[in-house]
Length: 391
Image (cartoon, rainbow, N blue to C red; front, side):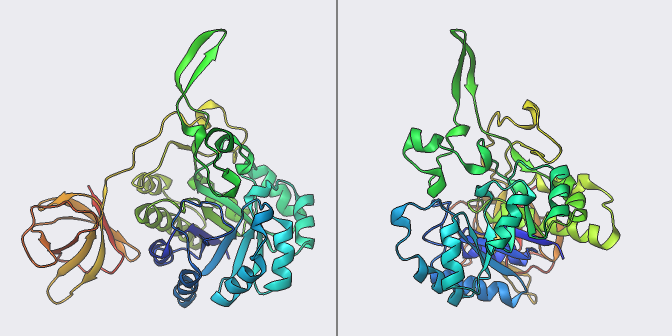
């Protein structure tokens, strides 16, 4: 069975990912994890997240994927035992020493090889399987033809990134951030220096006033049927630092596409799924290395996209008798705004919000305060964690 694996930077994002259709989520703890600037999970959060996910048939993997220095070894066995006790299903690792400690101190945790290892051939993967790994996250530089060859020559489970950020360096092994900002990308502190605007010189002349070295994001929606046919075990979305709107939108789209393909054996209309994905706050994107070495059009970052303000709010409660909606605002909107509701069980539904009130039922012209609790009526059923965005 194919797994849809989603990112979760905090408990709210974990709940959204699971409710919107993820079969598994990956989270980072407070220690030993990349993405140090994400909210990340305390052990209590991991335990709560595991209970929520397991009750709905989903799994939780914890990233333990830093490149460890000497000071990153102290306390690791205890942390492993705590993760196992909290209910984590597996850990994503970059260090063979960490994997050795995991087998010794927390044998119930499944071992997944991080993409940071840049594994791109079956001989390496067979070695890692002998070392106790059940799954390998392939290097993002591997193409479909290479995945086919790998699948024929190893029986380790394969995980492939299908959506989200890419790295200018080889599978995240970048040193730009270290040298330019003293923030170690391989210990969770990447400053994304490759996405800054540089002045490019050539032969003593300015060739470009705004040159960026970073890569476009990955957008592999049309490759999903091929990846499923190749026997890939897990399809992975990147974005632990992205919003709940991004997570809800991307997970929902890929869930529907995967289900359609498994049900009917084909996808009738890729474009409808693509248009839905464009509603999330995506940067310029391409198919990465899946269909071969990309040229400049499929690779260079070019320019960033400002964070979208289309995401307006998330539903907290709905009273079926009265039609009253209680929601949490995420961007400014006014009474009379035309919005689009969507959710795990809700098709895209447009609606004009007629009147708007605060939580004390005082009339509001505009919901302008961050995370303001608002109330309004809607003539159709809504559920907790349904969302709405600007039309």
